[in-house]
Length: 457
Image (tube, rainbow, N blue to C red; front, side):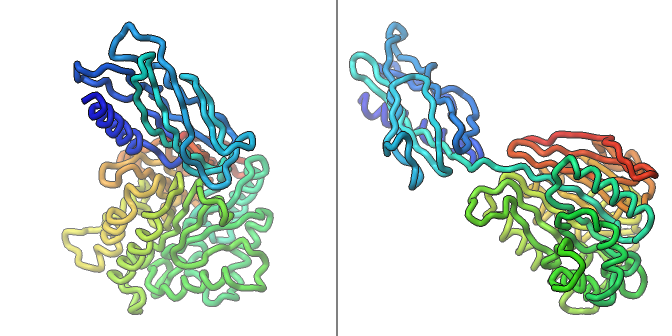
């Protein structure tokens, strides 16, 4: 009978431990006390702590709170045994590792999964064992980037913000810039050799030598009139520009209309800190494009299935999506589904489209709750907005003040901070936190950090 009870206790304890394990940290959880009065023997209790276990860093394994069903028995013995480890693991030239202490330390020199068998025994040789699984990760670097939108004007204001970006990154080690659309005002480009690529991108950012990961905005896809978004072939030219061999720099990065980038980018590193997903919002929000390639239903399904195929298997610790059009905004364009105060009651397909009804449905179907942050432009303001019940854990940044500004409303959506002055956001991604900073730019090109918030999980 005692053996059956012990086996059940071990199985349940193992299940609890395994279901609580995390990919980026290791969880050792309290076991439970047996209720059966006939049980006589030790009870395993491990410290209820989260142990972030990185390569070449020591971790403390603590079972000192273990007890005995007979409270008079105090002299328990402990045995930690490493039962499995990643291929290539070695410690002091030994392939096995054991410890006979209630509290012990372990140091992993290679990433992967480690399994320990913990056995607690009493003087009468009664014992109980459990398996504890720890996942080690390669020590992940930080990722630092700026987010700008609605910038491609070639104006004095764009140059002013670019100067502040350069000076800001001089001390912040920026890895890249996230471009949130409306890259070339007012109507996009007419060819891959259009001089506007130089006058409205290469020249303003000539002193910033890091990649710019870009997405398309409605002005980049202009058709009948500026910003109508009805001629998506024009946006394709910006994708093709990123493949040109003879351009002034290789900063402009837009491998497709929607795409994924992982950090760190080194292929042999399995564990990733960050995935970013550039999304194409214009075909879902703007006037009808007569090309069958940009049929709304077709684009929505194809892009949604692509996103799901990338985000579902991702093991990255943080995930960030970005597009031109916002889900939430306190700016003049407003929230998706009600862009530009569209009269939905008296509007059909076209009104719903330009109001962002179909884009809102797309985001809520595929993106909401899947990413930690969603960044956008479109409104020429800076906003750090709070989560909503409709979009799960996802939080929102609007950064469209890289060349001009528009007005804000205060009460449409709860915000952590917002500004109608020129500027940009700085996002610093660490293993356990994302630091969000809002930066305003003065008339002389100097800058001031006006907002900071830390996002954790």
